[in-house]
Length: 449
Image (cartoon, rainbow, N blue to C red):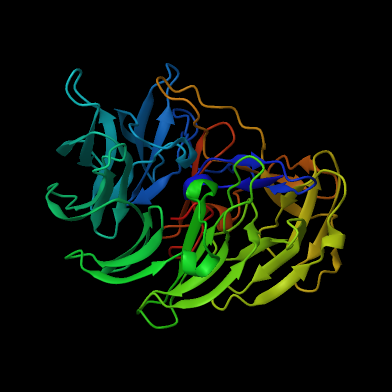
């Protein structure tokens, strides 16, 4: 099996690929701030900013809620009812957005008038700042110091809007559906989801187009976004020609037809020029952001699954391989240690194996703590009025030599959680929320920042 991330977001979809494996991670650490795990069933990706973390939770009655917590004290600050309208199931449950000292989320609209309302509240008090009626949307996201949202996603009049988070004033907009993939002080790189999808860099202040790159140029024709995508940026403090946005498009196959174009690629953030492209590689899950560590599984010209390959995300060159002959014949899941130097083949409750990505040599399994998904068969969430949504996937730690769960695993690795100002926040397999400040700076995780 291979875990694919549809629509580039949080839900797991398992594709049966013969003896191919899938991968995962571990539950939250026991030393997170007291009280964090007691009062919320987290189903979205946690979002961090301005000293708080915000999540979408599922209540016992099937309703959704926005829950906001103080990062330092681990104390819940406030909650409000939440909803989704026009969200694609493959995107998972939408998280709130945290930007400019505010939290933006979709709340139920006034009965008989609008389906939902975008409500922006003070991040610490929950006091309402402003509202905006919503017909259908994928949900709000922070883009630098601004708030971005694609509206009217269920209509032909869909548009991407950039708002002032303090006042709700519209700064600029463009037609179509787009997702924010990278933001710096002056620009945003958007993934425009259309029949011929493209990356587009826009000036944040004016909306002026700086460059555009059709992704078909990197992976070939017949792109179908139903398979999913992922992006991650390699940048320095000051924008330079060496800054690269790494992208991945997953294949999609309908019935017995040929799969759509897929692969990894890198484009320059300065001008959108193609730096490198590697087709016929599948992203494996769990895994880091493509900008942190890029490990894929080869697909042969005949459509068979081959070995594993690690790429240098700046150049696309091969940095390490594990040949197809190393892949076990028995069912397995991919599992990675915290340092990502080896690939483990995990069989729950049975001895597993591991190989070095550097030289493909067998690596010791004894004493190796490897992270893989807690389950590859998650239960569908029972959300009132919604079907087909799943919680963000949790990781569990395993003793690779025995295939058994590690009793006290500690926090999952940074390549999974990412970090914002040193804070790492994650959901465990029971839906509990955990946080710890043990990192440096800000870095993307498996599901982005």
